[in-house]
Length: 101
Image (cartoon, rainbow, N blue to C red; front, side, top):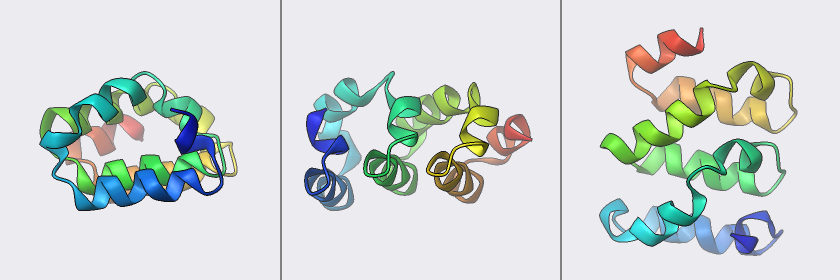
């Protein structure tokens, strides 16, 4: 978890997410789960959340989206959270996009 908030460590986590199939990242997801909102408000960790939204599919992505949708108004007011909201609108399914709005 510490790496995602690190100026350089977040790049390592981003590369893992982009390079390894999401089914093989189960342990990483377990560690990050429940922390996506907090991560979205951080300058470095928000980039990891964006890579998750771009690269994950199915129920893993749905869990991330549902966690963030609950706090969507807060995300729109944050200078880093707004990037995560934009990525959600680009990558989430139609139903989730409707929940955001």
